[in-house]
Length: 149
Ligand code: ZN
Image (cartoon, rainbow, N blue to C red; front, side, top):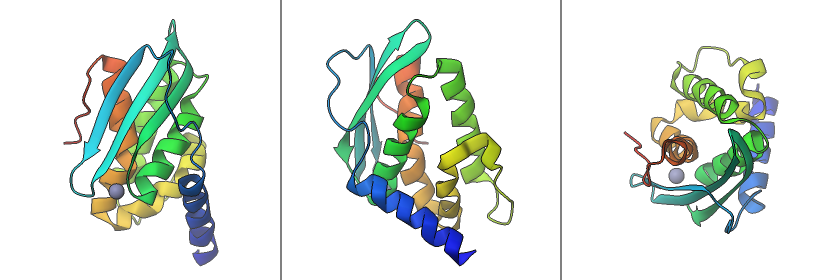
């Protein structure tokens, strides 16, 4: 189990150091800002939709390693997919981080995002990991600012 935890940490640190899809997106059709005041994480998400397909997605901002790695992995996971697929992944991610730590994670549902299963041990960190997803939901719904409850 500790090997698995180390592997997960490695993935998160790698995405924090070298975030994927990081930068501005001039061709964006949808945008939203997310802010997690508990930790100070801030991010702007920009999406380019072609019909119901997310053809491009980029993010900018600053925050802790968890929030940045989560945005990086999320953008990787939804790029090229449909809005419906992104929403399904949002639900799977949300379910994963809100189920008790004793419950196993269904990796077939969340794929690489399973690296964030460990945040369940640290309730404050769940908001860091979820920020990008709430911002995505806001952007897709046409809201400018994410609600992070
Ligand atoms: Zn954070």
